[in-house]
Image (cartoon, rainbow, N blue to C red):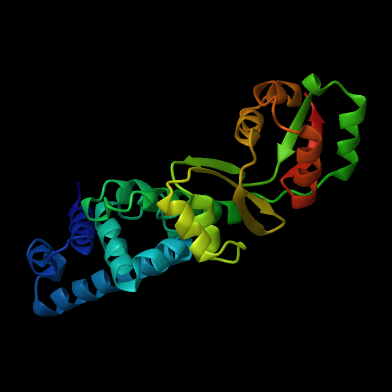
Amino acid sequence: MSTLAQQQQQLLAGLFSLDAENAIKNIAICADSMGARGLKAYQSNGRALAERALLAAYPVLAQMLGAESFAALARALWHASPPQRGDMAQWGDTLADFVAASPQLADDPYLADVARVEWALHTCASAGDAELQPATLALLGSHDLDVLRLQLAPGTALLCSRWPVASLVRAHGDGGVALAQAATLLRAGQAEDALVWRQGYRPRLRNAQPGEVLLVSALMQGSSLGGALDAAPQLDIQAWLTDAVQSGLLLAVHPL
């Protein structure tokens, strides 16, 4: 490894070190006091950037933890799982597992699933664009369902949780769920299946209907509509199709 490459590696190690004073001793290009101050500035800026990036992706988790605790969580993740890409909007995908493994947050086990729902919403917002193709819906009346495939909205995701995660996230946003209602569900240990998708450019979230998890899971795995219905026989497919089109979850129907 060249001298420059070694210096770069040492600088990166210093930036993500919890102890700037010790880290600076190992960085030749920052050996004097001015270098130490510069390293501290880089560390401070990096941690502030980490807090802003996570706050954009996890606003509900930030509300639940409080500003000080969330800032500490962001700094801890910055050191444990530093960014691997230049786009900070793509950083933070490991937060849910980090929260789940944290002894300090063990008393609130639902927080990890809240983070998973928020990350699904965050990535959904930047998913590839797709538009409704209304003319293709006529295939539902003219073809056997076993030869049809449904195209779902960009960013569609399912998250099954032991906790009322959809209600918790919606209660802290504009999802039409009262905080008191979400708190009651949480105390009761109510499990929920969360469905995430994008309607136009707006990420959406709601509780999955009975049987919908089986249907949507099969569709996401490439199953035909007929095969997906076999997996979810209790679902009212006519009502589901109407709601899916109106809400932007279903965009098109294609022959296999």
